[in-house]
Image 1: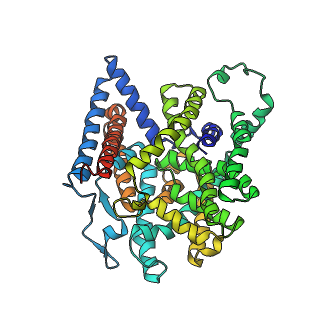
Image 2: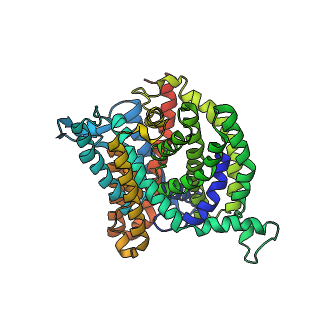
Image 3: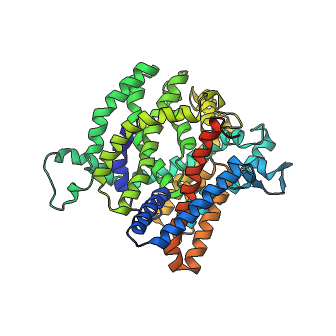
Length: 467
C-alpha cells in the first residue's frame, strides 16, 4: 500500500507541489530546519538556528510540564456554557499544544480563519442542534464526530474531485508518458532529475495485481471490488493531498468513511472486507499525501525528485521493519485504544462507521445523508468559485479544505491553528523583514520540540517509567 502511495504521489506532485496556497507546512518547516542547521554549521544562519533551538526548547518544556509533570492542563476551557454544557464539552477550548500553533503559523491566514469558522459553526451551532433534536445522544467529540464527519467529508470530496477534474492534464500526461518509455531525454534535461510521469502507471501495473490478490485471499474481498479500489485510491490521494498541503492535517477520519460507504454498497455485509478495502483505497491516497510533505522539503532544498522516489521506496521496506516493533513498544496492548489514556478517535470513527455502512449508505440516518449531500454540493460550488475568482478575491473566500477538515477535528485544534495563522499574519504585516528570517524557524522549532519530546514521554508513560 505504501509503495503504491509513492507512485501515486508522482502525478499528484506535478499538479500540486508548486501551487499557491498549498504550502505543505510540515515540509516547509523541515526544510527550514535542515537549512538553518546546515548554515549554522558553516558559520552562517546562526541566528535562525538559535531561534529554532529556543523554540524547540519551549515546545519540549511545554510537553514536560503538561504530560510528564501534569503541572499544566491539556486544554484551558472557556468559562461559558452552551446549551447547558461547558464549552469544553463541545471541544471549544484552548489547547496547550504549541505544535498546533506552529502548524497554524505555516499555513495561510485564509486557511486559518476558514478552520476557525468551520470549528465554530460545527461545534457551536450544528452540534447543539444535533443534541436538541436527538440525532446525537451524548455531548463529546467521540459521539459528535461520528455525525459531523459526513458533511465534512462531503465538502472535502466535493471540492477535491472538482479540483481533480479541473486539473486533469497532469494525469493525462502521466499515461501518455507510457508511450515514450525508452526514448530518452526530451532535450531539456528534466528527465535526469524528475521522476518520469510513466512511473505512476507502471508502478500500478506491477504492484496492483499483488494488492488485489492479497485483498481477495486475506479478506475475501471480491476481485472486482479490489480492482475498483486502485483507481479510487488515486482520486482519494488527490483530495487528501490538497487538504494536507493547505491545512497540514491528512484527512483520515473524513476520507476513510467515504470509501467504507462505497465498498459497503459494493460488497454488503462483509465487515472485515469493508474495513480493509477502505484501508487500501484510503491508505494509498493518504500515503501519497504524506509523502508530498517530504517532496516539498526536497523541492525547497533542491533535492532531485527522482532520488527522493528511490529513497521513499527504500523507506517503505525500512519502515515496515521499524514501525511494527515501535507500535508494540508504545501500545503493548491494543485493548487500551479507545480508553481515556489513548482515545484513538480515528479508530473509533472507523469502527463505528464500519458497523453502520457495511451495507451501504442506507445505514446512515436521513439527516446524515442529507448533510453529506449538502456538503458535497457546497464543496463543488466552492471549488468552482475558487477556480474562477481573481487572486485578490480568492483570499476572502473560505477554504473548502479548511472548512471540511474543521468538521472532523476538535474545535480546539482549529482554534490553536487559527491563533498561529493570526500571529504569523500580524508578524508579516508589522515586521516583514523579521518574519522572513525568523517565522519559519520558530514555527519549526515548536513543532519539532513538542513532537520529539512528546513521543519520548509517550514511550516512558507506556512502559510505566513515569506516571
